[in-house]
Amino acid sequence: MTAIENQADSFHGLPPFPVDVPTAPLLRLSLKNLLAQNEAEVQSLSKACEELGFFYLDLSDAGAISQILDNADKLFHVGTKLFELPLEEKQRYDFSGQKSYFGYKAQGVGVVDRQGNLDRNEFYNVSKDDILGVSESLPAPDILRDNHQALKSFIESSHSIVTLILELLDKSLGLPDSTLANIHRLQAASGDQVRFIKAPPQPVNDRRTALGEHTDFGSVTILFNRLGGLQVLPPGADADWLYVRPLPGHAIVNLGDAMVKFTNGLLRSNIHRVTSPPGEQADSTRYSLVYFSRPEDDVPLCRLEGSSRIPELGDNVVEEQITTGTEILSRRIKV
Image (cartoon, rainbow, N blue to C red; front, side, top):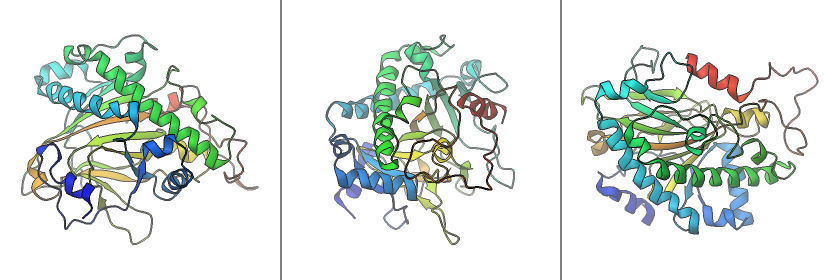
């Protein structure tokens, strides 16, 4: 194992990730090098986004943006307290059946596999637009109101990373400067959100999928977790599910379906799922913190013009009905 992997076995005092579990071959990128537009690192970003759509991002050496690690630590504590609230209190903010994707989702309300098994996690979605004052304030528990500044800082830091990734992808795709960044502006109305997730230990005799296989429907996802459980299915007919090992000081970044739409399939939104953590980690509660970046509400999800690399649709290909970020979010609310 590398030094980083040895560190990962004990960070935050959690049980170690097993050494004998096959893991996904995610590239490890440095935010510091991306900020410096190091040519080799930018090429690695392009490779990761085109081949797997997942990569590690080292945040530990990136100066001011490294504060996102401190913000994430604070919000992990907030998430623990949030999920300790009585179920009756959390259900006051349940978004099921509402015209919103923000608020609480209880465990066991979604089907995760063909056998009809229900999900084994609960989560709470916090709107970026709410926290930044882009939209009207939404009802929320006191624990979230009391940590408004920590949420705001986390959103701003996360979004700055998203913007950097999009600007570098503009260059690698041959798009005019800021094409992607200008349809993912921080202060513009969008479905961007922070998600707190809790997945308790599963029964020893029934450890299975906690969140079913899916792709993300947005643009860029930034994930912080400390226990295994996330799995990706690499491309290929003979591929099998592989765990993604959490690494200290790193986020796990992946692209969503919107980026596939914008690039006519050049960039990849890879299928993934969450299952019970491996080895001794299975006996611990798995908390995660996620920032989902999505296109602005009125942006059409279609092939972007002006690129020297994005494939054409082809003479006999008709692009399916164009939707917007708002329409995609509305569909998810109805699921």
